[in-house]
Image 1 (cartoon, rainbow, N blue to C red):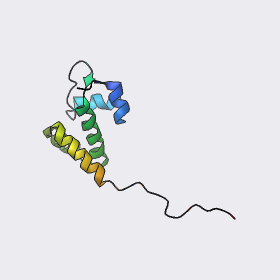
Image 2: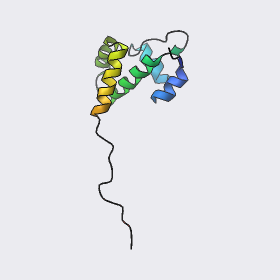
Image 3: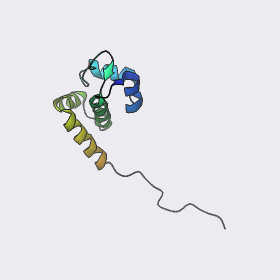
Image 4: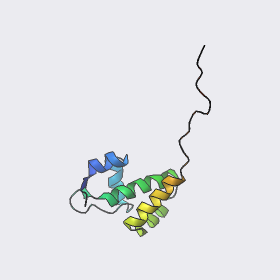
Length: 99
């Protein structure tokens, strides 16, 4: 099992350590496996929580759905949501090049 500290978890998820602690306190994210040590499942759950928050889902709905999922379901849901995202916008016309 990969051991991830809370600062590493914050850096990899893009979510502050303060928010991570709040998510744990609010029941959105399970507590660390041991003293301050998280796993890959925590990272995946944080990424999913961030996507669901961006969709403006209520915290209670996020808590209920994410905590009901095992790590495999979280990974599949995260992959499906990422696959459903529109591709990044690109410039449809070529850049102007003076002659």
